[in-house]
Length: 465
Image 1: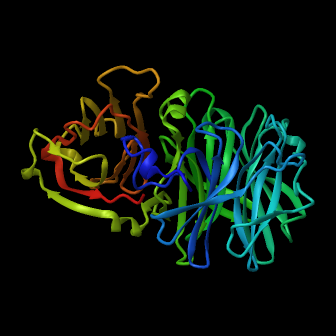
Image 2 (image 1 turned 90 degrees about the vertical axis):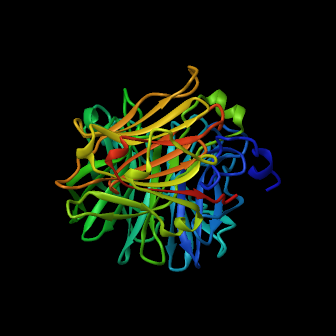
């Protein structure tokens, strides 16, 4: 790539330094993610023309450690006068007996025709040949009552059979995940809805379904589009019996800017999740910046004894840790801790019985970002306060219920990278946020209610670009 973030965006304090994003322009959903011949490949929604959503291609990057990514040439592009002439939408990758196969949604110019297509990759995953008989699924089930939302194939193998989930909605009912079956990845049979949500509770439409075994359970993750609230990511845990999903537990995977997650299993048998982190600023600001969207740090998934979905940044991430500070309550006061830029890994443990509220606050040039736990309401919150009101930057309060188990302390993992905040509480509650300070002058970290602190560790993180 002739344009690199090291040069073009050197002075952009909002651009992340250790999260992956392309050299410039628009990025959204992770698409094919696969551990192939010892290397991690990430394909993603990409507009080569600018920092706005249009002209979707599959971008491509590769990594040996899930941290340092090399951006490669575009993998799959629209073909004129074909089922994908309007764009290469989201999908997945599978290994078909040593042959890489991409399954994706092709769309027309207005996106109101959405069909499922396949392409076969070269051994190095750099060159892709589309199946001449595309689309492999073109007919929308009549029971949906609509034809526009029919996309995001997620495919897995079970013995000699392939299964696919597709995202959609049933008019007047709510989001739906559809289940298909095939013996060869080309000829697909529609079986039935795998899961149908309630519009008022789960959203009017689902996107980017993932369905996979975890421990002795099956997990369904969907990105939910709501009518009167920001879109969010939901998960359901249950049983998969006789090609039917029986949910037993449900929750919110992320209550913030994380969306369109995609899961795969690597060669170490870890179930990894990747997610698109959206922007919290206007389209005009995104175009002005020249870049938009990025990928969350990959995380390892597991279930706890209550079937709650646990996620933790991959262990490789800790290799980025540099200068370390360890604090106890007696080390802290109200003056704040000076920090060198917004590239941090923070681990904090609080005794919530010691204060009505606890958490941390970052201040940069008069702008503030706070992570607060309110014990009385059992809510985890992210609050952003800007010195000057700016209608093109989102500053709404973010929050989600986070109930602690009896005797459990509050454990926060906070990743800060430029304008990005990834927050995980006790492994099971997550908020992703965006914060756009006007400067990094006098950047400092302050602890709210120092008496509640059991442990606080901070690390400066190395750049990966």
